Image (cartoon, rainbow, N blue to C red; front, side, top):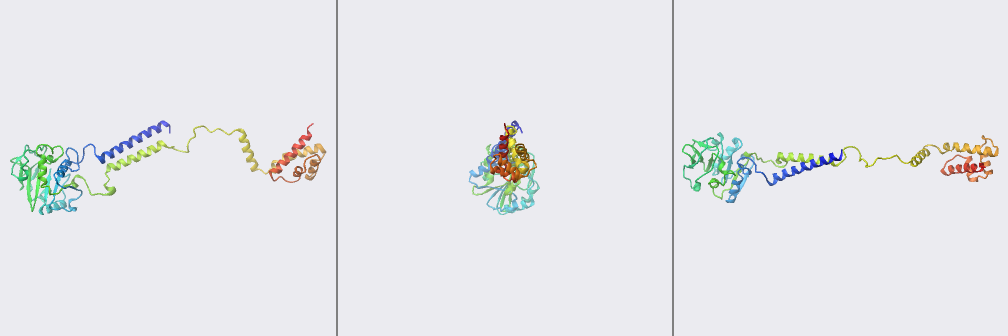
Length: 367
């Protein structure tokens, strides 16, 4: 892989890792507003995070209930807030809410409602997409004394039913109140006044405080119907986080490929040259010396010695080794060197001795 490719892959890995880290930081610490409509977690214009914050500043203890309502313990002194559920409320949850209200609890239902509402409020009004323009007070209620004008754009109104119309027009209401057992259910056909975008307009904030009741009542937002479950551990990790982890793994592998060698051992910066001839010859000689017997290697040298002795003394070339030793001593070869002519060569010293014998005879043969 060329240096240019490595640099390119490395830069791509850094860019991917930086984007993933920024996305995780945004998820942890906030950033662009977002979240489900009318959720107390949502900071988008249609969210209700500002309403939850307003209640906390007014002295209410604010909590969120994730998952199924039927699995939770619902204390009657509380106020439960269910705004714009993303789907029908289950039968088990409606039974739990009905029991909660019967025992003196307060329930605030905001937005469109289906047939499930009649399981909580017998004789509940029907929800209609027809909007209510400029709602007016239809029935005096002490806690709504500060609510004179509302901004509630969008669809939603109540028609018929046995609930008391509180705010609206002559033929339809925006806000109705139903008494169920010892408790109360506030029905807000359009949850827009409690959303972030409108809470600071007109008397919308005053309406939100009135619906929650006195500050001594804890307020719990039912977030299970906005997609928030009770999962823990790995199951609670959002899917976008797993995507981010996968991208980080890809970036790490890309950076490893760009930084390391793709295949094979490290490549040398210079080309390997053949060794000098002297080293080659010495190496080859060493291999031959280790692979062949010394006696076989010295046969040509011994033959040369026989010929020199025959030329000097007239000795036959077929003479015995003892005769060769005796003739060599007679010609002045030292006894320790001449002795090697009558025995096999076993050591390096014997090899050198044979060489000295030939060298001495060669010197004597020179004119």
